[in-house]
Structure formats: C-alpha cells, structure tokens
Amino acid sequence: MTKEEFHQLCRSHALTPVSDIRAVGWERGYFVVVQYAGKNRVSVSLPTGKDDEKTYLKALNRDLRDRLGKAAGFSWAEGVLTFFLNTKKLPDVYDQGVLAALDVLRGLGFTVPDACPLCGRSGCDCAVPRGAAYVPAHRACLESSVQGAQAKAEKNAGSYVLGALGALLGAVVGILPSVFTIIALHKIYVLLFMLIPLASYAGYRLCKGKMNYAALVLAIVFSVLGVYLLNFTVQLYYVAELFELSMGDILSLVPSFLRDPDVWVEISKSEDFLKCILFAALGILLTWGQISRTNRADVKDARNVLASAVPYNRPQSPDAAYDPAAGETAGDPTISQE
Image (tube, rainbow, N blue to C red):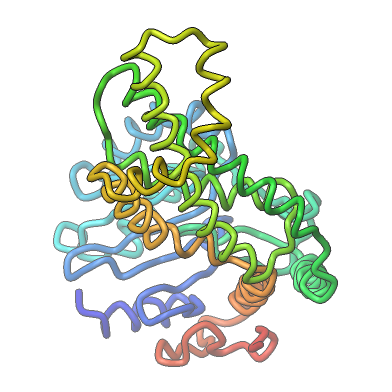
C-alpha cells in the first residue's frame, strides 16, 4: 500500500486526517486512529482503561489469532491498544483488517474510557492525542486549561528563596547515588552524575520556586555546587578513613575544610571532579527539555493540545472532505487554529 492509497482508503471511509499519515474516526463504536505505518503495514490505535490489559489481554491474543492469524498483531502500552495489520496478507485491509480487529474487541465486550481527563465527567465533544490514540475531552475544559496556564504565567507565583532552597536540596538528593557507589562499592558510575541537574530542578519546582528562566539558571548553578559537594564529601570520607576518625572528629573538620581555599582548589583540579562536571553538563543537555520548562512552556503545551482537538462525533457523510496536506484542521472549521 502506498501513502496515496492510504489517503484514498481513509477518504472512502470518511476518516478525518490529523496528519499526512494519520486519520481519526468512528468505527464499530470506537473512536480510532488509523495510521500508515509503512509500505506493508497499517496500524489502528484506541485508548484503554487502567485495568483493561489484565482483563482482556489473554482473550484478545487468542481471538485475534483465530480471526486474523499472522496477518495481525498488537501492542498494549501506556493505556493505548494498537493493532498492526499486514497489507500484503489482507487484500482489503480495512474490512478484513481494521473492522475485523475491532469486531474481535466488540465480541469481548471491550469498551473505551469516555471520561474527560481534565474533569472526569463524560459527555465529551472533542478528542485529543494521547500517545498513538485520541482520548475524549471537553473543549471547555481544554480552554479553561489554557486560561489557567496563562493566568499562572502572568501571576508567576512563587519564591526565589524557596526555589533556591529546593534546588539545593534536590542537588543533595541527586548526589546521594554517586556518594553511595563511590564509598560503598568503590566505583564511579559517571552516568549517575546526570541525575544531579534533574534532581535540582525537581527540587526547585517542588518548593514552588518562580517558574521563569531563573529556574534554569538556579538548577545549573546548584548542579555545579552539587558536584563540588559530592567531591568534598568523598574527600572528607577518605581522610576520615585514612586517619580512622570518629564521627565527632569528622564533624569538627567540616568547618575548617569549608574555609580552606586549598581544599576547593585541589577538588577543582582533580580528574574525578572534571569527570563529574563533564557528565553533569551532559545531564543538563539531555534533560534540557525538562529543566528549561517555564510557565510559558505550560501555556504553549495547553494551546497545542487545544489546537490538536478534533470533533468527537460520528461522520455525517462518507463523502467528508479529506485533505491530508491540510493536516490537523482539514475539513472541519470548528477545530481551533490557535
């Protein structure tokens, strides 16, 4: 099957395009996503309930094999059930594949969630993406979510002091796995250093720091401070072990160590410190999408969800407009284009 043939297939079954390779619509009482998954494969996805996998997995595996054999398979992950259909083994992939797979579900009495993820009530009038599937929602709830995110961004409630304290505590938590492996196992796992910036940012958020770019700056600053603290702790442990110091002696040494600039210079020049800094920096790069999030990012996400919403109603005509090049708003002027 070519992509053009896929478009024709969706058009003939009155599915609404949401991208060049995906379309949504009602079939057999389910709101499904039909996707072009390659030259010889089409997939069908729909959302599931929390405990549906335990309830239906074994029976679905049996009945789908009996009905479609090796022409179909499925995956069940993160609340989304996806069927994979082999177009080479199914001459009429829609009737023999898509509808047949959904008939198997109907035979099992399978139902999909109909509650809005924001308010928990039914009676939804639109659907929004969740992974490979679309889940029902209320447009009013999505609009309220955008307004709430905007109000929060404008107010930007929070405290730099509490945020800085949270970033420090987060950095301390982030270094604990490394401290444990170095002291208890005498091994350095450099990948653990990447936890430090993420933990520092998480601490900033948990302590309700202001969610602007200060969050990013403080997360980076306290990540570096955490690396120093990690090396300081390890060096103090080695000194205590070498001279067999008691806990009281160790605690009495801490203030003098902290005041001694030579200690910090030696730490900065050590090979282990350079490794820590390098992998902490790598951790910052890998978690940039998280630690650079501000309230404005939350507003953008809320708007994107609203813009991706599609009507949650059955198609009125098999001749419904289908223009894959138009993307998410094709054929329906009611879809938000913010």
